[in-house]
Image 1 (cartoon, each protein chain N blue to C red):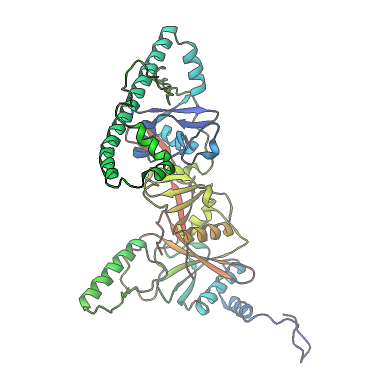
Image 2: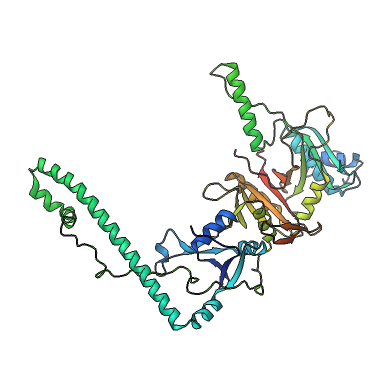
Length: 191
Length: 306
C-alpha cells in the first residue's frame, strides 16, 4: 500500500475482507498454489465461517489420499446442520422417527428426525472460470469420501458411499452460491 | 401382440430412423428401454391431432445403441421399396390386393356385427324405456317435437327397420397397411450401411441406456436428454443430462442454471462424458454382440439450499 501523508485517510478504504485476505496470504506458508487461488479459498472459508456458521474449517493444499498437490486449494468444514441427506437415507430416518414417536405413545409428539451434521468438501471457484470434465474429475480423484477431521472417533455414515463436493462459485460482487456435486449417477432428493 | 424377432429392421428415410410396426415399437420400449417419439399424424390436419401415432421416430442415439448391441439393423427403406415393388410380379400384386380386399371385407363385417349388437342392446333398453313412457303418458306432443333428435334415434332402432347384414351389399373397408413387409419379404441385414451419426453427447446416452434408464429428448429443459428411472409413463424423470467431451469447456453459469432448474423440478442436473484416458472395456450384451466402450464419468448436480 502506498504511504500517505500523516493524518490523511485513503480515498477508498479496502474492505475488511480484503484486509483479512491480504493479511492471511502474507502469513500463510502455502506458496505452492497461485495466490489468487489461495485468496479464493480464504474468501470462501470466510463466507462459510461467518455467513453460514460453519466450524472446523480447513484449507487443504495436498490430497489426503495420495498426498499429492491438489489442483487448487480445497476447503473442508462442518456445517451447522446436515447439508445433504440421500433420499434413501431420508426414508430410513423417517421410519426410525415414526417408530420412536409410536414408542413414546404421545399422540401430539411431532416427528423428530435427528441427523448429525457431516463434514463436507468445498471446491472454491470463480464464475468467470471455464471448467472441463477432466478438471472436475481431477478434483474428485484427489479427495476422499469424507474429509479428514480432528476427531476420528465418530462412526461413519453408511449411506455416504459416493464422493461429493460443495461447489462454491463466487461472483465479482462477492456473492457465493453453493451447489452439491456428486461423483456419478445419484438420484435427486425429493425435497 | 405379435412376436418380434431380433434383429428387427429400423427404416432409414431421409436421414430419420423410423419404426412402423406397432409390435416392434412396443417390444423396443419394453425390452430395450427405447421410447422414441411418435410422429404419425393426419397428413392434412397435423395441427388438429393431439395424439400422434405411428411411425415412431428414434433419436439417432437410440438407433445406434440398438444397432451396436445387435438388437436392430438399418434398412434403406426408399431403396427397398423401389426395388421390391418394381420387381413384384403381377400375380403377386393381384394376390396381395385380393388379400387386402378380404381383410377389408372382414373388417366391414365386423363393424356391421358390432352395429347390430349395439342395436339389439338399444332395443332391450327401449322395452324398458317404452314401458316407462306409458306410465307418464301425459305431456307427450310438445316434448316430442323439442326432442326431435332423440325420437329419430329411437325410431331408427325399432325392430324391422334395421336391415339384416348380408355379405352382398357390404362395401369392404379400405385397409391401409402400416408396414410393407407382408407383400415384400423382410429385407436382409446389410452390414454395409453406416451407423447412425450421433452428436457428441452420445457416450452419456449409451452409458445411461446401459444402466437401464429411459431417455427422451431434453429440449424442454434445455439439456440433451431427460432421463427416467423407468418407463416415462410410470415415473417422473430423475436427471437433466448434458453430454460433453472430456476437454470441452463449460461455463459455471450453465452448471448453476442447470442445477437450479433441476432442483426446482425435483431432478438432478447430470454432466457426463467419455474418459479418453481410461482403458476401453468390452461390454457383452445378452445376444452375444460385444462393443468396446470407454468408461463414462458423470457428475450429478443439485442446489445445496444455502
